[in-house]
Image (cartoon, rainbow, N blue to C red):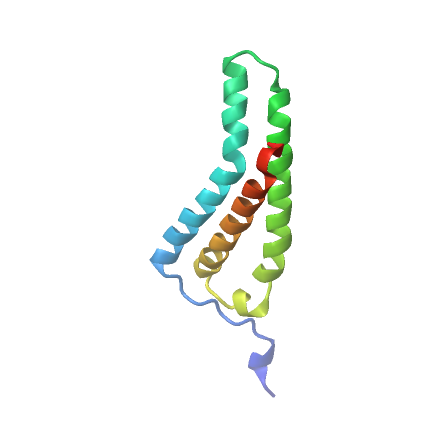
Length: 112
């Protein structure tokens, strides 16, 4: 009887550099996604203007989050990526998330 058949494989150990890479790429993703919303909101509040100018940026952020989730969730749960250590997994998917968010931001053009 093979007992190890039902045992979940242990995760690989993390490399410290992977956490820094993951933090770097995911922070750029967050900055590209939420930066315009925060800047426009702060400027609108500072100049006592209505927040209607923020609405297109919020819609763009929602599109960016949706497309990033739609693209990365299947990759995150793929067997090959699932075997990686958590930090390596996030460091691997971080550049993809940054690329998707930046592409959506640049392709939105004058809509923002």
